[in-house]
Length: 252
Image (cartoon, rainbow, N blue to C red; front, side):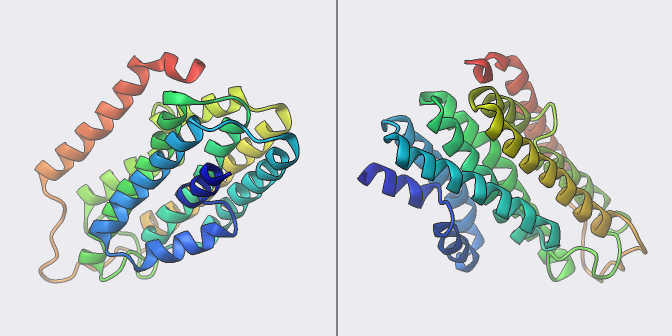
């Protein structure tokens, strides 16, 4: 029972997710990003070493996980701030780790799923900070599209957003397949609904950030460097190639 309570803190479900998000919001970014990565991995490790509880508690956790995933995926539709969008998307993804664990997934595979659905949110949070420095905030759609003013940063942002909505061939896609393979049909419908809401929310964010009048570039604001673009895209390519090269991990 203690292990389950600790896992609920590290991989929060509603209503603990409210406290978790409030805590993340007040943290400085240099703490927020490592916490966003480390805590769910620790939670997945803990779950992987814990026995699934008896049926009544397992059912309650299953319902709570499905509700949490859908709730935060739905909330994404109204969010334009990239920093908030990133942490809410991660909060919507973590309950899927619970669903997979409740239906037999454990060990390294569970940790890989947690990482695959969390790393894009952490990257978006870093890019949101870059947007804040250049635009005065990470709120998109306030004054127009950002592409003409910051084309390189926008390109990296688009790639990170595609990875966050678990599109192929990014690791999140294989993580979603692993979860879908693990859960029964009723929960598979929930997972697919969450996946659809992520795509819808990403489309809304794209509409606000990539369409409309050109965002006026502030004096002194510079785009992401070419070296920075190369590094970010190299990391994305490594993640994709690693997922494809180790494609069998999601089938276990």
